Each structure stands twice: as structure tokens, then as C-alpha cells.
Image 1 (cartoon, rainbow, N blue to C red):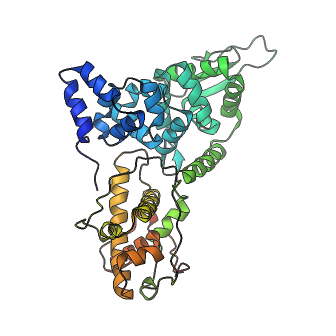
Image 2 (image 1 turned 135 degrees about the horizontal axis):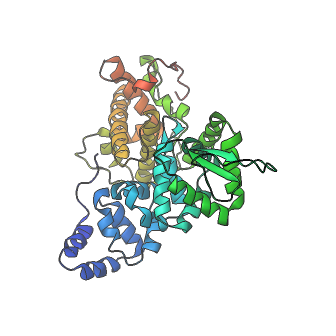
Length: 397
């Protein structure tokens, strides 16, 4: 369930060719359609994607087609300090998702991380900064400004007023003083300069926010906007995600609905590339072995449901969503406990695994498996969930 260690064969051939004949490697890359190039990039380990992207004939057309989370993973692998050229070609939606996934910690905006993204946007040029200014919530930018600088507005009509020591200004009205002596505010001033020239009302709103708005209220609004967007990408609200760890009694664990359930996720806009699941008869987890017995169309639906469960695990465990290693970890954990639950329900009801999957959600199977392992002393909820109230209701049954 870990990330791939080797690129797919076609990508490997192109990368090997690039060592001796870069022009021939470019030609070999160009022989693939843009969709095929996206597949090659996303199925290649993040550490080697930069090499493939460097061989693309049309990065301005290729990069916007990458799933936004894959763009985030790739930018990290390149290094944000060197990813300006990548972000230059990114769409506004990709930029928004990158920051939503990576510039948050424990449910709060991570100012330091957002500052690193700002440096990367600045490296991409003024157009990239302007794109980022509209793609990211004003509240997030205001919080970054509050963290890095004090903003002082020149009083109107006071001819004796002197600018603050160390103050820097773009318009002669608002002066910024670094909150850290070693911070020269270069990227921040570049950002504000672009806004002053091309989006004045956002410039004015942000500087006024630093003076007058409370950080706690600004954080709350930023959190609300982000939660809504993550829900659209398949990430549940944190309080909902934690339900997979809620208590479930032994007496109700084996109870299942009589009717086959409907489940439609065909149009889910996944932020990641569809992983290559080990779905075969010898798979380590019974859940994957069960998938092999489903018709192709139904198997895809259940695999999407499994990805949705992995997202719940990532959110409930407070894993860093912008880290490429998070998805493999949450997939492995989801498969483990859902398989325990599947095995138990099959035994209790004398049903085949595919029939159970048609009647019981994979979220519930995870919950059953986790509760049974916890009762046996082999599993504990994440540390940040210790001591929280448990829910012993079993509405689904």
C-alpha cells in the first residue's frame, strides 16, 4: 500500500533515454497524448516527476491537467523554493487546493507554511502572485500579514507625523513594520505591490484587516471556507470523520440491513490520481480480495467508496493532507480495519464478502473492525481523540 518506488515502464524508458539523448527523450514524451502524459506523471514517484515535467513540450497545457493534490505533492518534491515555474502554469483551482491541503495544521492556518507558498508564488512572477491573490481567501492572506507585520496608517492632516522606524510603504499611506527583525518582508511587499497595481480593493481590505480585525474571528472564517471546499473534494468535516472511531457494541456489530444499498460516486472530483489498488485473489486484505468478485462498474464504485473512507481516516487522524505519504498511510489503515470488519460480518451472517459490501458501508466495516481490535487490546484511537465522548448508537443497523 506504499507509494510506487519505480516509474511505470513507459516513463522509465523516457527517463533512461534522457540520460544519453535528451532531445530523443523529449520526442518520446511528445508521442503521448496530454492525458497519457498526465498518467505518466501521476504514476511516477513524486521524487522523479520533475525530470518528466522537464521533458514536456507543452508544460502550460500539461500542468493544469494534473489533479490538484498531485500538483501539491510534486511541488513539495521539487521544493517550494524552486517550484515557481510549476505554479506559474497552475490553475487557480490547483493553487487553492494546494494551500487548503498544505498550509493548515491542527485545524488552524499555518502562517509559516503559507509564507513558504507565498515565496513560491513570488518566484513564479507577478501573474502568479495575482492568480494566488484571488485563489486564496482574503482571510488567509490577512492572517499572514498579521503574523509578519504591523500595519500603521498615516494620520490624515497631521503634517508633523513621522513614519515608524523601519517602516516600509508602497503608497505613502500604509507602513509595514516587520514583527521579526531579521525579516525584510520582501515577498510580502512584492505581493502587496501587485495588489496595489492590479487589485487595489483587495490591497486596501488586507491592510485594513491587519489594523482592525481580530485574528481569532479571521481564523474562524478562513476555517469555514476551507472546510466547505474540502467537502467538495471528498474530505468530510472533522467532527463527522471522527465517527469512524465511535463506540460500537458487540451485540450490534453483526447486524446488517436487509436491503442492498445504493452508492453513487462516479462523478466525484478526486483531488488525487486514482491509486493502483492491489485488487487480486492473493491480496493481503480481504476487502481487496472481495473487490475481485464484483463486476467492473460496481468495483469502480466500491473503490471510490474506499477512497472516501481513506479520506475520513486522514481527516480523523489529523494527518497532513498535503504530504504525499498521507494517502498510502490512510489507505493501508482503512483497508486493515475495514477488512477485519468485513470478515466478522461475513462470519456472523454467513454471507459472501461481495454481498456484505452491497449492504454495509465501508465506513461501518471500518468502525466494526476498529472496535473489535480495540476491545482485544490491539488498537487505540489517535491521541487527539482520547477522552472524547463516544457514540454508542447504531443508526445504520
